Length: 224
Image (cartoon, rainbow, N blue to C red; front, side, top):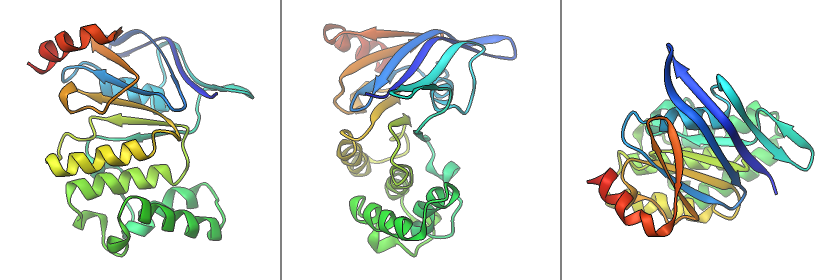
């Protein structure tokens, strides 16, 4: 089973340590939640895991039956979906990543139709992404990522700007892809996170796993 692995990964900005000795292994079909206060390093950790940044020390890689690679099939959904949308229409946004990968036209059309239906975006296919609501934008961003069939999905506080109904729609979308990829969801508020296999807490650059009996205390400490 493919694994996304961080081993003793560390990262600094301008000489200031942000992450220290991060160790985690995410497998396909896992769903992990990482709780951390604002500015705790959650986004930096996801950027390391996705290959957008490289660690100052330690390693981050994808391991499968063919060995390991420093970059792999990893998708990342940012806190603000506007940061990752550049196409003119909803269907073009879903197709763009596949076009850049050189997927043949027929396959692109099939995947776009599949994602439009799966994430309930067919009625908006010809609209510009900027015209969508916050929840619709997050569903579109998720559809564009999943069109490329990533083995791992990293979520950077994806519900931060969503109201309760939009958050429920996003959680439904995440649940629908849970069996296809390993998922790591970061949040400052564990009360809003999906049901998960393992909990982690990021504090002062250190990632620590919490067992079930410690989750209530973690919720009160982090979420207040």
